[in-house]
Length: 148
Image (cartoon, rainbow, N blue to C red):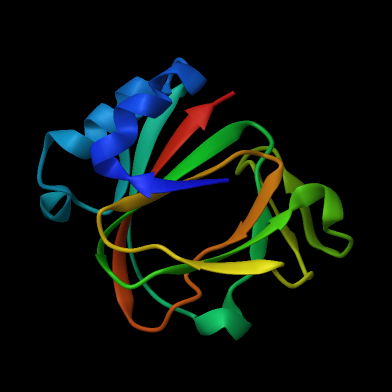
């Protein structure tokens, strides 16, 4: 898991060939003006999901993990707290992995809670289970999905 400011995104380009295109999408324009849903960047290799969601609080946030994608979660507006736990330490599967959606859910509690401030991003690899929407209040978030 990585937490940093979008201003320093360039230092992460070398970590994956799709990161540069994903970060350039975040840097290029007014993300608040985009419609919710999927936005193409590089086909199925790199795409963005724009979400406008209410927070669920820590009690309502569920740990999730992916197998085929890395998440770059960027907070555009509002408040966001995300729980984190190593996927290898998750013991209670509440929803089995679905390849179509590339997601599975766990009943375990996060090991840590991290606030994601506006203008910052977090990168979650498959080994990073994460519980988004753990803050209260609405938020606007761009999630860049980068295929492994």
